[in-house]
Amino acid sequence: MSRPARVIALSGGVGGAKLALGLTACLGPDELAILANTADDFEHLGLSISPDLDTVMYTLAGLADPERGWGLAGESWQCMEAMAALGGPDWFRLGDRDLATHLQRSLMLRSGDTLSTVTARLCAALGVRHALLPMSDDPVRTLLTTDRGELAFQAYFVRERCAPRVHALRYEGAASARPNPALLEWLDRGAAVVICPSNPWLSVDPILALGDLRSRLAAASTVAISPIVGGRAIKGPAAALMEQLGLAPSAFEVARHYRGLLRGFVLDRVDAGQADAVRELGMAVLVTDTVMTDVASKQRLAAEVLEFLAGLAA
Amino acid sequence: MSRPARVIALSGGVGGAKLALGLTACLGPDELAILANTADDFEHLGLSISPDLDTVMYTLAGLADPERGWGLAGESWQCMEAMAALGGPDWFRLGDRDLATHLQRSLMLRSGDTLSTVTARLCAALGVRHALLPMSDDPVRTLLTTDRGELAFQAYFVRERCAPRVHALRYEGAASARPNPALLEWLDRGAAVVICPSNPWLSVDPILALGDLRSRLAAASTVAISPIVGGRAIKGPAAALMEQLGLAPSAFEVARHYRGLLRGFVLDRVDAGQADAVRELGMAVLVTDTVMTDVASKQRLAAEVLEFLAGLAA
Image (cartoon, rainbow over all chains, first blue to last red; front, side, top):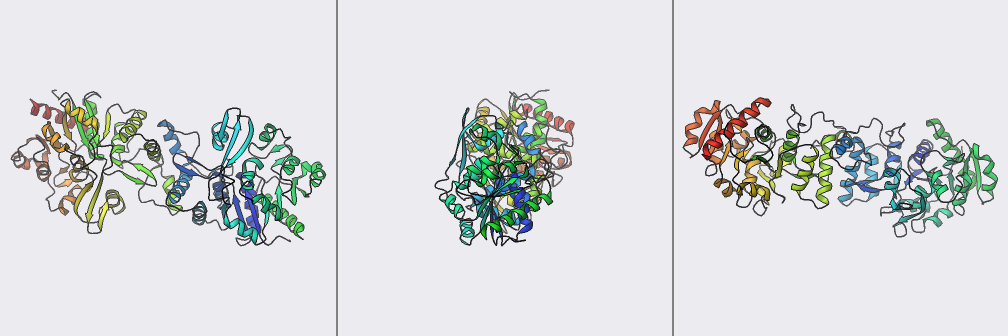
């Protein structure tokens, strides 16, 4: 199988983590790094919480809950139950084991470590071999303009369960935040870029909004996998969000959103009819099965994406 | 049964909480308040932890673990297990349910509430009817001069398991810390004082060291119950500590430590032989069964102490 020498995968939470896990089966720690969105990060209960970093970390460590899609397998909820009994804030459910991650992260951040260093230490402790990079060590926060006012991401996503209608999004701090220096090094060394099937507006755009990163990525060999399959999001609010932003929820619209950035786009077979329209945006197209239901399908899709990338670079 | 109109009980952790619980069966919320030592409080994992307040609160709420002697009944330890797996600090074991108390307390303190207010809210949420008062809203910290250098209380007590030999103690911040204003109000209104069978050096002296509180308490009708029975501490390091400080571990030495402060002293029957020597210190003496093994023995001792107090006041 041909494949690029180095790959950076850009990921949000669950969907991105699945493909990232598939990629780790194909590429070694010198060949692959995963960069995760941190614009969903927030302070809660006095703790620094990084949902996407943790979803990727737990997934790569083999500790993620396969049913629930987030958090740790075998998790318990004693602390949140007791918090509810105390009348404390319990709308964002933190599992007992997961709490250790947030306590330890918060301690290390408070002692002056960067989020990159903290993430590397947590990953090392959990046996994650590939580099997991926060998109930035500077704070960036997704804010949604909705019919109930401007909401921080977790308030919209978890507390309000995506019920408010979204008119616009902004990524506070993104313009001045420095992209993770390790990402820039990987790009300097010719890494190709895989944008995982994550929410373009909520998970990927915050990364693209960092400084001049969009043009850096446009200069690299960059492909994206559609998170929209058959007009629906595999997970999360992407399709509903697209409709609220006045877009048809389709793979084509995702590709159009990324135009000027991508050399290639990966569509599911059910959306094969949109391939020509995507090609007209100036992208190569790979049509394949993109729904990752098990380990084998993650690894197969990862291998196909890498082969697609290698063909583009040639 | 005769009893004083108002009583303030001074308490450390487990032993004090037992008698406090007994007293709550004898006196209503208008008649009894419990003041707890806060010189064992510390910051750990970024959380504000108040061990004695929590032991009393959980005991009065009927939530304390009767076997372990600290923490909550039915507690689980998932977070600490995960913390150990992360290589994080796990020497001070915080249960999953207990963590909610510390998270909520820390949140409220960080938002500007006093420890008194926070404690009142936590107690209200857990259904504790009697006022539980931190000895002060200002930080006081017990520091122990040992053969391994000066140690903070929890480092000595939990991390080092009382192994270092103690030469001296000091209560950092005590001289400038203001006693809880509610305590002063209770004293102004003629409350009698019960010093629970808590460690005199580690739990009671920090309270006595606050401003001019010792002389205020000496002016009140104050009695103490010996935490030393038959030359041993019912719980904790009191006896060993007394030896290291050059004192015989006896009820008499406890009484002598409190001389000038107490009108009465409560001895266990096994120490009846020391009653005359204690009387020579200028205190009335009550000899009774002081070991509280069940609810009935807590209530009986509480009732006897209150009757003893009433007799002194008369």
